[in-house]
Image 1 (cartoon, one colour):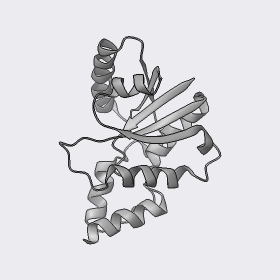
Image 2 (cartoon, helix red, strand yellow):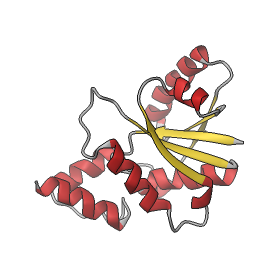
Image 3 (cartoon, one colour):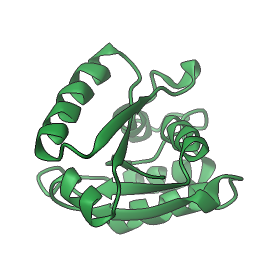
Image 4 (cartoon, one colour):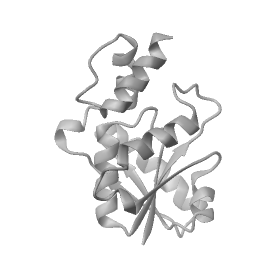
Amino acid sequence: MKALYPGSFDPITYGHLDILERAANLFDEVVITVAVNTRKESVFTAEERVQIIQDAIKDKAWGNKVKVDSFTGLLVEHAKKSNVQTLIRGVRQLSDFEYEFRMALMNRRLAPDIDTVFLMPREELTFVSATLVREVAYWGGDLSQFVPPHVETLIKEKFKK
């Protein structure tokens, strides 16, 4: 069975990677897909985010079960084109669940044959978000406990400019 794990991943964090590993242990194949929102300014381009994710998973034991791509538009349409019936969504706290629950219901309305599975990261990663990582990076803080080393280097380079 194949699953789709969508998100902006701007940047990918240890929390995202934890969810991805859990999904890879549950499914035969996981497509982690970078959502491109043209109405939102990102630190990294879609192409950069795809490459950053590929670099983050290349040495993982489960990395061979993961493909990386990107999309624009409706998630359920991308899922249909990718021949996927299961969406993976990470939830860290109650506010995430409320938002993700509404999205899952909308996706179900748009595509009744596509299900959403919610996964939680390890407890120590529940507060980590890409938004907070960007904020810490902007102010020059230590990101080593939140993102892989190559991500820390790349995001700090972005904020030097």
